[in-house]
Amino acid sequence: MGVILYLDTILVPLSLFFTIGYHAFLWHTFKNKPFLTTIGMDTFMRRAWLQDMKQGDDKKSVLAVQSLRNTLMTTILTASIAITINLSLAVLANNTYKAGHLFTNRLFDSQAGAILVLKYGAASLFLLVSFLCSSISIGCLTDAIFLINASADHEFSSPGYTQTILERGFLLAVVGSRVLCITFTLLLWMFGPVPVALSSVVLIWGLYELDFSGEFAKNSKKGLG
Image 1 (cartoon, helix red, strand yellow):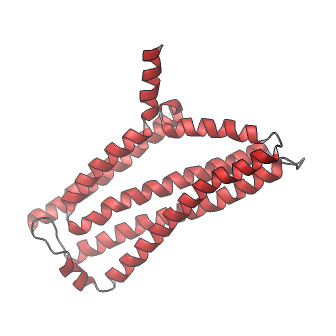
Image 2 (tube, helix red, strand yellow; image 1 turned 135 degrees about the vertical axis):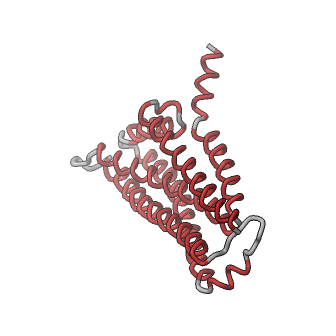
Image 3 (tube, one colour; image 1 turned 90 degrees about the horizontal axis):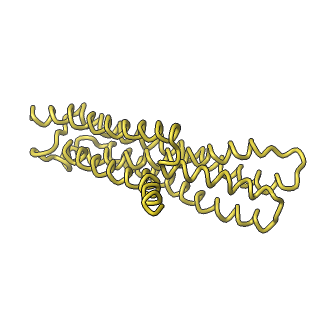
């Protein structure tokens, strides 16, 4: 049991440290070298796309609504998953001792009272943050759709304000989805600290392949040139 508690105090904080550290590195790269990240390239293309929407074409306005609707639906799904899992954890934690017997495993897990509460609390906190970010993102994206359609005909429209609301919505959507991904690794803590560490490594590797594909695209262009 002492070894299990030792793994809980070492592997889980270390996994969170590397995961949060990766996102800090991603944010630093996005701010300093945005074209090395897919988020930076998406932001640049989105700004150019929004400027093109300002030409007052009704067909382009309809296209803008349809394009943002896909992101809006994805964000709504993220918020729904987060709050559903959070409510499920609340029901499961309602009977702590029975839940502890369900996940008892001497090889991987420790279900001491304090550790069990920490597991539920950490997962619930991350789920609530994901739900909050996704909910705010939904509001921002909804406002952005209205502003894009209204700005073409209104003389007092502010393209800068529309751009700010749009980027805020997309940024919060990304944060909400990333926090939900981190929560999935924490949910594996119910089975022990080893699955948390392994899933965190897989998560970081997968996100790196998605976030820094622009670096490979840049290198391939240099090779073709």
